[in-house]
Length: 545
Ligand code: F6R
Image 1 (cartoon, rainbow, N blue to C red):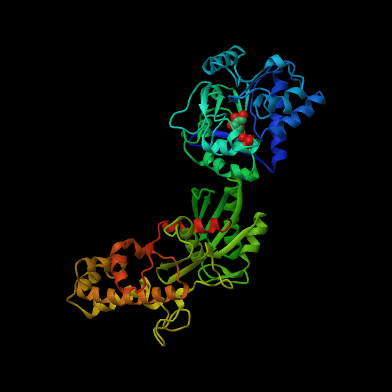
Image 2: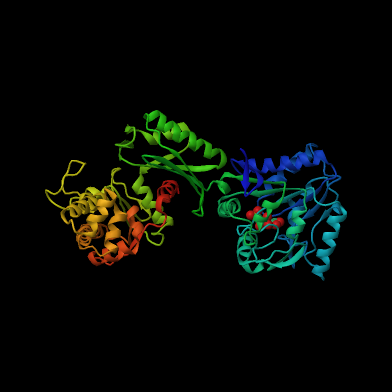
């Protein structure tokens, strides 16, 4: 799969391969094309585990006389310092073993920095001059370190432009210790081409393979150019192709949050960054149209981002993987099955409140907690239960906390039961009681606000509270009393690390939380959602992790 990635106005080609074998053959193909187009090409070469497969294929091609190295010149990116050519871990040894001794390249045309140079500075200068006098590098092959280094240009506040001697970071010493018998044997310094040397290559291929490159590839793709991930500098080069296998790349998840008026789509990467976000209007004509719209948008996003998994949050009740939602054309709809088969990839569906809770638990207000209850206060009350960092769904429908009974024989609820918590502690309940109080207390501030606006809402009730209106204060106290009673019950049942509140009313911030804390008996932290309306897409996406 070949994609073009845009990075703030710059484009980079990405070749996404199924596995390491495909990556190796794609990279070898590019080198072969270069040699066919220009037999006396100057190649910049890398060592490390990643290019080994590519070298193996180039050797085979050379043996079959498909490519010819007899006029090729090569310059290697780097060499440890100090190290002798004979050391089996030296890059001299590596290149001889993996390529030079097996192809028809002339030894005098291969150049690797001298790991025992008495004067490393002079050696670096000599190397730069040789690259220059050979006409410059036509094609540079690069690997990428887990810390984002290229060559041995390690993350730093400033990057060196020319070939230089550099200390190695702890992360690189650790990563490279796999090649040495003992950790202490890994050299602490290296000679390396500088960023400017690499940058002057006419064409660059950057190879990344394996899960341990997942995070750095994601950083490379999604961060601005910065010296702490040196590879991001390549975004400024006009001809770079990133060749990646799926394990290095597939760290992006697509989250879909279905709502009654809009459907939100978001791509979340392995560092939990929302790297793409968009939405479409919900068209409720019928089930087929709605699922078709979702699938079309997912497909469009999948063309730009190689998505590993799709998660969907939907309102409604989910039983036996069938969704029934009042405001959507889902009537025992097998949403998971239908979307998975349309999109030909795994799709997971959960209740939208559960998804929002997962989003908050993994990357929002509940980040530090393993067990959280998220309470969404709106027209009704929704909930999400996260236990051990995972959604608790019960048989599919757990978390309907708005319908737990708080008053036997109490107010009638739309669900058919009586005394449900949401009839007392939702914003609708607060507004209903405030409007009644406004009508009953004609001299109150609440009454005049009600009269002026023809209705009340959460914001107007807080306006009356600001003005210390006793009628509003009485309604609000009763409201908090019920809200706190429900929260205390949930804490008693689940003993969570944290309660997270969301919904429009939480915009009141401390004006809601501070008085609420006076009513709640438990001392478990109560926080307000930090991801706000994006919590659902985060959580839906992260169901794939
Ligand atoms: C090697 C080099 C390094 C490696 C990088 C990735 O010449 O310059 O930048 O490309 O450390 O190494 P592997 O491929 O072993 O993961």
